Each structure stands twice: as C-alpha cells, then as structure tokens.
Length: 416
Image 1 (cartoon, rainbow, N blue to C red):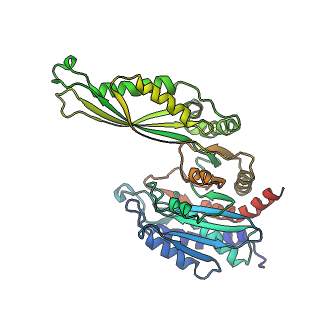
Image 2: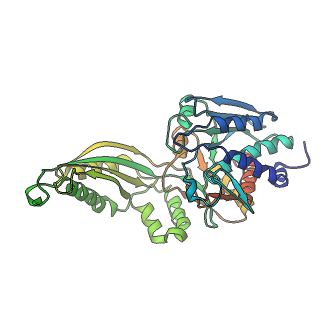
Image 3: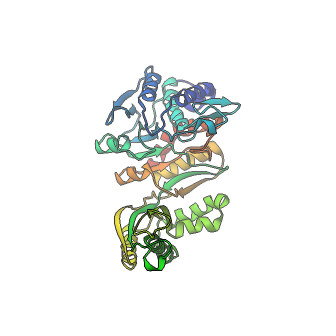
C-alpha cells in the first residue's frame, strides 16, 4: 500500500488529468451521428496498464459502450455512469477550440462540462486507485455509454436490457453545480408528451367567419389546459416535499424564488410545436401541436393525464393523436447514497451541498426504475451545450477527488 492516498495522487498529477481531458475532447462525438468508436478505443488504451477488467458492449457498432470493473474490499457495488457523446457544435460561434483547448485555469471544448470532463475525472480516479495500490472499500463498476444526448437505445437502455448493470447504487457524472452553488440531484420530474390534432372547416382567408380555424381551435385547447391544470397546485407526496422546498431554495437565486416555486409546485405546460395551414389566404382545416407537460416527483402522472384527457374531450374538434408519459422519481434525501455523495462533496468544496430535483429527467430515472438507487453529481459550469463550454481545472480535480473518496463514505454510511 502506497503512503500516498488516491486523493493526494490526483492533486499531485493534475497536469495528467488535464491532458486526459484534452485527449477526450479532441475526439468529435457529436450526436447525431454519435460515433463513439474512437473515444472508446482511446479509453481502452488509457486503461491498458491498469489491473482492471475492461469490456466493450456493443448494440450499435458505431456506438459502443464500455464497462470497467475495479474489485474492492466489500460485497457492495458502486456504479459510476457517464456518457461519451455530446450535442453538436457550430465552430464559428466559438472563440476557443471546440475540440479542446486549455487557457489559463480553464479547459474549453464541447463536452468539457457535459460530460467528458467528469468522465476524465472518473477515469483518473481509477488510475489513482491503481497507482497508490489502494483497494476501493467497495467494488466499483464504471459504465461509459453512447447515445445519451438523443435518448437513443444503443447506450444505457441496451446495458440495462441485457442485465449488465448489477449495482447497489449509482452516481451519474452530470453537472449539478452552478453559479457558486453546489448540489446533488436526487429527483427528477415526471412528463406527459401530447400530440394534439385539430379539425376545422376551410374557407377563403378574406372571409374567415365562413370557416372554422383549426389552428385557433388548437391554441384555445392548449390555453384551456393551462387555465385548468397550470393554475392547480400539485398534490405532492409528503416524503418528496423536503426535496421540492430545497429545490426552490437552490434555483431561487438564478431564476427567482417565485418562478422556482411555480416550476415545482405547479405543472409546467409548454407548447413546443404548432403546425397547420396551407396558405396565408386560407382558413386552415387541420392543425397539429406537441405539448410538453412536466410534474414534480411525488405526483402520480396517470391521475393528471386522466384529467387532461377529460379536458381535451371538452374541446370541440380536438383529439389526442399520441401520448407518452413518465412518473417522476426520487431518492430519500437522508438515504445512505445521498448522504455519502453530499458529505463527500461538502468535504471537498467546503460549502453547502443542496439535495434538489432536476427540472427535467434523464438517465437517473432509467436507473431508479430498474431498481438501482441513483443520484447525479459533478462540479461544473452553466455552459452546458453553449458555445465556449468550459470546465475549470480545479473542478476536474475536485470531481476526481470526490469520486475517489465516495466509496469509503458510501461504505461507512451503509454500515452505520
């Protein structure tokens, strides 16, 4: 056993961590098309000198996934998850190199925060354990997946469906900290995605009273939904209320407390797509809309959907052509996993770590629905998906230190 701890190793080799991050950023994995073969090969080569088990799992040949297993001292498995694809970028909108550039204490590049930076920190945590001859307190499983940014099936869904992810808890390296506030994401919101269709009666655009405007009908139906549901305070399960209140406190400084409170205590209803009509001088006979409804965790989505169906039935000429929905999920704020991540992060950042809900929903929901307790945590910036996305070097180091300390804190929380 080395006299140097994994955390000390990381701090002493920060330049190597920067180099690794730049290596990952240099490979374009924009999705679409989302080709991750080159970056997976790069990671495999990085891991070759280490005594770890590496397995490539492929559902789509262009979008492989990588599993890395690090044996530990206890019969518990902690899973770290990160995605290798990024959203596309317009290089002309950047003032720095979108495929990786270090300027002073910042590393720029598409994916620097979301989330190749966190992936590099996880990989460096593996190296730190190996370099210091330190056996993790629990077994570690790392799943680096493809196809996340477009919600595709070649990444995480393929691993879950194939039973490849047998773990007692999971931490996803999505950025959860911004504007000087740190948090661990312990919940996500439920969703209802509706496709509405409207029928009307055509007429010449110069004589609209002789027709029935399908677009007007459709817009009126959405407004009716907003008035009937958007103004109704949600009935949130009592055990989720503390998460909602802490979420309001977390988001308040950035979006305003009133807006944050409304976002979680009431349904949000967004008209995302509205299509209809053939010509400016014709009354449209048909129209189509796609509406995104979000509900806080602790709300039973099917109950709200039943009410929406009744509402649409009351709107003449409107039908629901398609619908998909999900129920929000949450971890108990005082669960061993949440306590472990929050305490490890607080020790590294020396600041409060909020336990809050995401405003949307992502892979954490898939893990929880598969029976794996899951949170999201990574220090980062609010430049996700933006031009000149960046991550500070101290954040790369801080994430790697948290990820190496977490197994010991996790084991102690379980044993208490």
